[in-house]
Image (tube, rainbow, N blue to C red; front, top):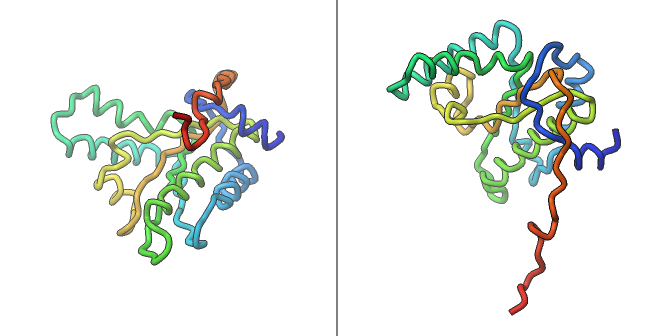
Length: 187
C-alpha cells in the first residue's frame, strides 16, 4: 500500500477477530511506531502487548479499578471485564515522561501519541484492523500500577488490533477549508 493511501484512508476498525498479527506484521507495527517525531531523541514511549489469557487478567484489573471508583453496577463491572476481549491483541502505548531542559513533557506525550498513530497506520497498510481506545480506566492509578508503569509513565492508548470482522468503512472526505486558514486573518 502506498503511504499516502494509508494516510488518506485509514479508519478505526472496532470489530476485530482472530487472528492477531503475526511476528513479521508486529515488527512492522513497532518499527513504524519508532519513527514517530522525537525532539531530543528521548524515545518517550514503550509498549506492552496483551493477548490470550492475559486479556482476562487485564479485564480483572479493569474491574478492580472500576470498583475503586465506587458505585459500579454489575453491568458496569461486566463491561469492564469484557473490554480486553474485543480484540485478539491489545497494545498499550505508554508515554515515558522525563525531565529535560529542552523538551517539555507535553511534547514527549505528543511524541508517544504519534507512535500510537504510527502503529495504526502500519496496521491499516497491512490490512490489519485496529482502533485506539482510552476512557476513564486508561487514567486510573490502579490500572497503571497493575500494568507495571513506573513513575513518570502514563497510558496514552489501548490499541485493539486484529482481523477486521467486516469490511472496514470508507474514510469520509472532509473539506480542508473547514480546518485550514491563513494567518493573519483578513479584517
